[in-house]
Length: 141
Length: 108
Ligand SMILES: Nc1ncnc2c1ncn2[C@@H]1O[C@H](COP(=O)(O)OP(=O)(O)O)[C@@H](O)[C@H]1O
Ligand SMILES: [Mg+2]
Image (cartoon, rainbow over all chains, first blue to last red; front, side, top):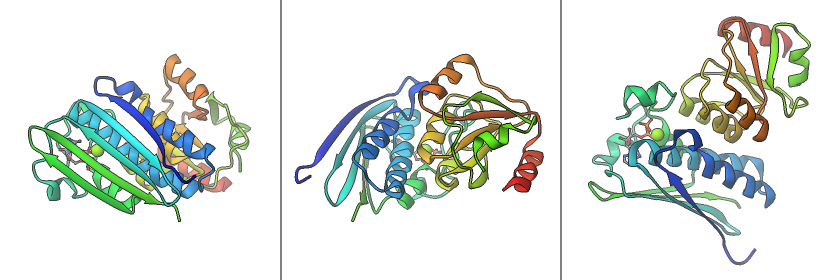
């Protein structure tokens, strides 16, 4: 596996019922590649939270996943409203989700903290009014 | 204990059972999906009263051995079909969450 394996997904911002689909597909692919279950879990959790955030906060986006010998990289890009105060958004429990979204079980304000916790590297680039790009890596070796 | 073992008791019934030999090693309780996602462990039985379709992705990604819907909660036919397709075990029980947890504790 010298060249990176790449997967690309479009995350639909209108459809709550398929939210998480890209993460489930990635999990399947990583299983087939024979990655250790704990690593797959880390990638799955980190990516799911990011994917859900694109659905509930940004009206959808795209996910690019690459797998190299050393790490799995997840890049999530959206053209949503952006994050005004990243430090505040990173705090456990902070959420701008509406009651409607909360009634579905989302909006606990644990997404970004989970992404940080389950990845070995995470970088957020966000411009208010333009969108957000989040890069995460989970080391394999 | 496996998911099948739980079903030998009349307290639980199966909503979807694609993988009844899954081992249950522990239990996690919660309705907030991010909490479950971040804290449930692989092979936990997950007790919840949430019944919307998003519980399937969470169970799949967190790799729980089954979802147990307490308080007699059930899901609609489409969720049932998706659960079969995604190989997610779902059981339901009329016990409340506390009673379900105590019951499982006695079996683990
Ligand atoms: N992709 C995004 N675009 C815009 N805002 C976001 C995005 N991701 C997160 N946020 C903001 O950061 C907050 C915290 O996110 P998170 O920790 O996942 O909690 P939750 O999704 O439960 O609200 C969100 O409520 C939202 O205001
Ligand atoms: Mg979130």
